[in-house]
Every structure is written in structure tokens, then in C-alpha cells.
Length: 543
Image 1: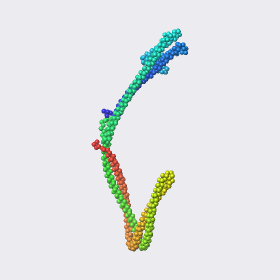
Image 2: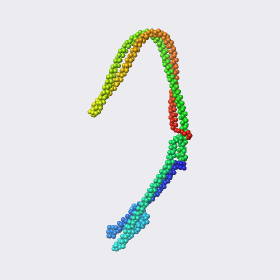
Image 3: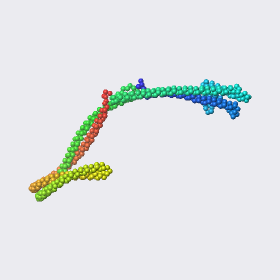
Image 4: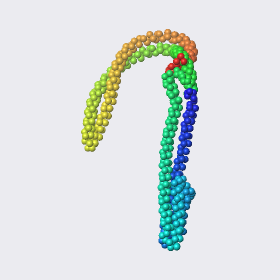
């Protein structure tokens, strides 16, 4: 039944009960505080009564002393002052009995019957004492000292003092009784307030625990169910409060989310398959486009080269005719030049032999320099070792070895620079030796070629004669080639222009296909990532 009550109403009921209990405790507290205030007022009012009784004793005693001095013949005191003191004592008695204000102090009327009776008797005794005092004065004037009035006066005075002491004792007992009663009431109320506050705290804790349980317990159960079933969670809580509304809304949301995930599963599979097919197709198209572009580039280059070659052939053919005629006349001169060349080659062979001897000598000298550098390197190592030992000895010498340490450090630096320079010289000598070896080999090959050239020059001389005869036939053939090559050059230029246009179109198509392939790969990556993320959710198809 409690599950059908909303959390708001449960909270209102709980806090309403708590408010009613707190209100009841507050009303009870106020009533008890009022009672304590009344008790404390009673205690406070008893204190002025005791003061008034002291004033009565003081006035009666002082008046009695003054009166006895007057009766003894002292003329410094007056009877009026005595009677004023006794009237003052009677007025304090009236204030105590009836209540009122005197000398800026407020007195409450007493309620204790015994105390009223005692103070009333004390007032009557004061009046008797005044009456006997007047009679004593009359007897004193008539010479009757020591009469009955004297004894009655002293008896009345003693009665006043006795009744005042008795009234003070009653007032003290009344004050103590009121104070003890106030303390007992205070202790009782303190205990009641303590237990009442504890009871309210327990009620508040119980209400808070009950409300929190109605909220936290179903939420923990829901969280545990979600951890267990995940997206396939179905809440089965037969509640009609806010928790029930929340679970029903969660059921509807999870059901819709499962349907969406199923659609996303199917769509991602279809998209992944399509993206794979698109990627494969674009890869094939991109490969074919690249191959076609390469082929067209090759054809374009070939046609351009052919066009250039044909143009050059045409141009050279025109020149070749004149050159053939000129070559025919130059063939005779060439024979004479060949003879002179053969003689010069012979001289060059002699010079190459001398150069070879010089280079070999240079190789031997560089080998000797290498040996010297090895000796310098050994000396440098020894200097480094000596500098190190000198540094150690300088360190041991302390302050006296500082100058020696500086010198040792400079020697070490000089040795390091010498080592570095020696390494560079050694590297240069190795390069020189390598170059010398290559020069010797090159001169040997050059000498062999020179010997062959001499032989060939003799053969060339005999061939020039045959060439001169052939040039006549060549001149006629070159003229025919020049005409044909000119026409072929024009045609090849046209073919080259058309192939360039085809190549540009092919390159544009290839670039477009590559962009499509990149987009397809990126799209495939996205679909794979989406499938991985979606596969995290395991949808139960039975729901």
C-alpha cells in the first residue's frame, strides 16, 4: 500500500508527524517555563520579605534604645524620632501582610497562613509596646518609676523580637521550599525535554530512514539490474509512486533504444558491405586509370620523341646532303690528318709512360708519409698518457701543483689536436693513394687505347677512300629522305597533340577515382568503428 503513495506525500506525512510532535513539545515547554517563572518570582519575592523583617527588627531595636536613653534622662534624643521608628516598623508589617511598594522596592503579599498570623501578632505586639511606652512616659512624669508598665513594655519588646525571628524562620523555610520545588520541577522538565528531544530525533531518523529507503532501495535494485542485463533490462516494479513512473519511463526508453540499435546493426552491416564493394571497385578503377595514364604518358613521350626525331631527320637530311658533298672533299684531307694523328698518338704514349713513372713515385712517397704519421700517432698517445699522469700528480700536489696541472692540460689539448690533424692527414694520404692507383690504371688503359688508335688510324685511312665513293650515293638518298621526313613531322605533331589531350583527361579521371577511393576507405573506417561501438550492446532479440 505504501508503494502506491507518492514520495512527496510520504515526505509530507512524515514531516507533518514530526512537526506535530515538535509543536506539542514546544507547547509543553512553554507551559513549564511559565510555571518555572512563577516559581522563581515567588522565590524572588520572598527575599524582600526577609529584608522587611530585618527592617522591622532594626526599627524596633533602635527605637527601644532611644526610648531607654530618653527614660534615663538623655535630652539628645526626642520621643518623636522614637515613635517614627516604631511607626516605620508597623508600616513594614503592613507592607508584608498586604503587599505594596516602599523605598523603591515592590513587596508581594504573603500567602502562608502561619507567617500571616506571626506577622499580625508582631504588629499587635509593636502597638502594645508603643502603648506601654506612652504609659511609662506618663508614669515617669508622675514619679512612678518601675511600675507594671515597665515590665509590660519590656515583655512586648521581647515578644516583637521573638515573633520577628519566628517570621524570619518561616520566610526562610518558605523560600527554601519554593527553591527546592523549583529545582525539582526544573530537573523533571529537563528530563522530559531530554527524552522528548531524543524521541523527536528518533522519530526524525526513523522518518528519514523510511523515506530514504523508499527511494534508495529501489534505485539500488534498478542499478543492480542494469549492471546485470545492460540494455536488455526490463524493470518489474509494481509501484505507483515516482519510482514506478521512472521505471516505466526507463522501460519505454530502453525498448525504443533496443529497436534503434537493431536498425543500426542492420544499417551498419549493409553500409559496411557496400563500402567494401565500393572500395574494391574504386581500387580496380584507380589501378586501371593509373595504368592507362602511364601508357598514355609513354605514348605521348614516344610520339613527341618521334616528332622531334623526324624533324631532326628532316632538318639533318637537308644538311646531310651538303655535308655529304663536303665530306667527300674532306675525306682526302682526313687521310692526311689521320697520318698526323697517328704520329701525335705515338708521342702521347711516350708522355703517358713518363707520367706513370711519376705517379708511381708519388705513391711510394705517400706510403712513407703514412708510416711517419703512424709514428706521430704513437708519440701522441704517449704524450696523452704523460699528460694524464701529470694531471694525477698535480692533483696530489694540491695548491702547489695547480700551475703544473694547467701545463699538463694544455699538453693534453695539443696532443688531441695533433691526433686530429694526423687523422685528417692520414685520410688525405689514403685518398691520394687511391687516386694515384686509379691514375696508374687509367694511364695503362689510355696507353692501350693509344696503341689501338694507331692501328685504327691506318685502317681509317684506307676506309676514307671507300667512304668518298659511298658519299655520292648517299647524297641522292638523303635528298629523298628530307622530303619524306618533312611530311612525317607534320603528321606526328598532330598525333602528339591529340594524345596530350587524351592523357590530360585520363589523369583527371584517375585523380577523381583516387578521391573516391579515399572517401570509400574513410567511409569503410567509419562503418567499422560504428560496428565496433554498436557491437558493445548485446540486444536480446526475445524482448
